[in-house]
Image (cartoon, rainbow, N blue to C red; front, top):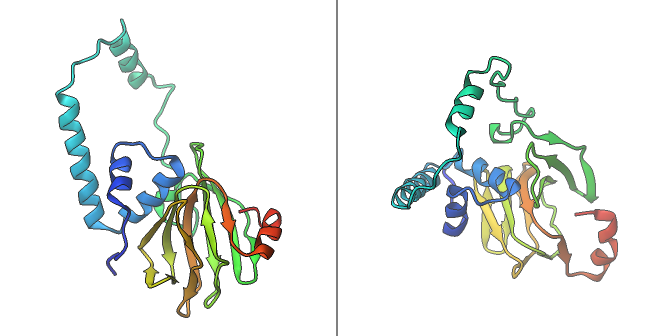
Amino acid sequence: MSARHHPSEETLLAHAAGGLDEAYRAVVATHLAGCPACRHAVRFAERLGGDVLATLDQAPMTDGALERAMARLDDPTEPLAPPPPALPGLPMTLAGYTMGRWRPMARGVAIATLQPPVNGRAGLHLLRIDPGTRLGEHGHGGLELTSVLQGAFQDGARIYRAGDIAESTDEDSHAPIAIGGETCICLIAMSGRLIFRHWLLRLLQPLIRF
């Protein structure tokens, strides 16, 4: 099934330029793996960026830089390591990540933290939501990118299914609900903390740790 919701143009351009934090990069890469249209957009942006770089003045290399690089390529003591396998049940775009245990957030909701091979500022999590479960209304302390790996959820009038990506900023507030008969599993990258609107959820937030 083709994705119906995609990253913003700004996010795709930042990905093409290598400017995304590692957690956001992983979410976008997971979407790109199943979205030919977005892959085409990223390749176009990369080619455009390469053309721009070709017009810039060249910077001189330090003395011996090329020789040192070639020596490292020929050094038998530094073999190329095989790519690490992906965790069972997770996409290959998460190869090399380690996964913490599932922790309950609320009834019908659990979270597991993913540790990337390269540290970044944003957090990366798996969120598991039972069918029919609604998350408490909340906002965000920063950008949140969500890629649906399994199942579906509804956020207002929009429905996000496997392969779709949802993008929320610190100006958004929502209360998504898992729909359909399948458990919804999402890959989420976010900076800052969730900001719950209900006073009881705000009171419990130190226990939720998300």
